[in-house]
Amino acid sequence: MQWAKARGLEQGQKIRVDATTVPSPIRHPLDSQLLYDGIRTVTARLSELSETHPVVYQGHCRRAKRRVTNLCNARGSERKKGFYRDLLKVARKTRHYGKLALEQASGWKDCSSVVIVEQLRHYGQLLGKVMDQAERRILRREKVPAEDKVVSLFEEHSDIIYTGGRETLFGYKVYLTCGKSSLILDAHVVVGNPADQSQMKPMLRRYFEHYGFYPRQSSLDGGFATQDNLQWAKAQGIQDVAFAKKGKLKVLDMVRSNWVYRQLRRFRARIEGCISMFKRVFGADRCTWKGWDHFQKYVHLSVLSYNLLVLARLLL
Image (cartoon, rainbow, N blue to C red):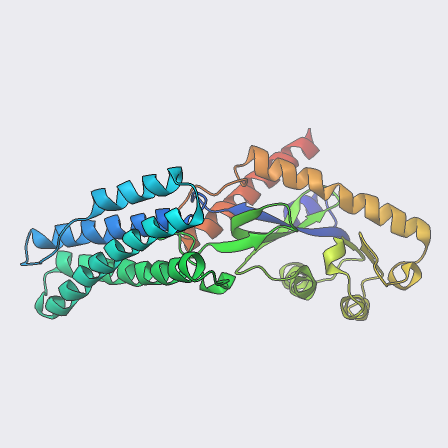
């Protein structure tokens, strides 16, 4: 933005803020598939340890895979419960083998074994959580809170994002601040599924920390609209604060006139095109890198690539 400002391409006085979701590189989570993933992963670690240490275990991967196939083709809840009980039985046996190996591992000092043991402990704990959620959801018909659920054994950091009743995504919310030139001036990846209302102040504070001033006008999605957010923004010297859906707020409390409100609403609507381009052209529709740190780098690299193209178009 500083580079664009020096060339008169972006002043940063008029911004728009909205959120989007970037999914993680995982398949749609099913309890049966998660159990199978845990069984085969723990078994693989036990197999590696057995090459150099006297580890006692028995592989049940083929049996687990048959039960997953049975669940895919089964009809009727009672029949499915029977397959789930057997799959949970296999998972308990496999986890027990893992616990026995961990008890024996206290005297193993070679580097390769230490790494495998830590992986075994990690995946064993995740398998225990998956077993608990499957038993509660399938056998006891309980509702499991989102914070207690495991959606992937390999990308366990992924959050469950509910998108207003349309579909459920598994990844992270990304808040974007976009300028008049369509440059993305700030991108913030948040953990969990926070309400938009709670993110307006942090986003504007981040903007001030980056650039040293608050914008003169800001236009935001309707989810940010609260009286407290409006009063806080006005106290920071932001002259016009328009929300796409005003709710119980009065237009003249937000902006100087109805005409300014209409203009800012139209200005905010154009961020949807920026988000669409950011996701379609630069791969932000689905992260393909593994791990939480790599997820953040992937998103920010997509933002950088998007901004370079926007700057090139502005200079043509």
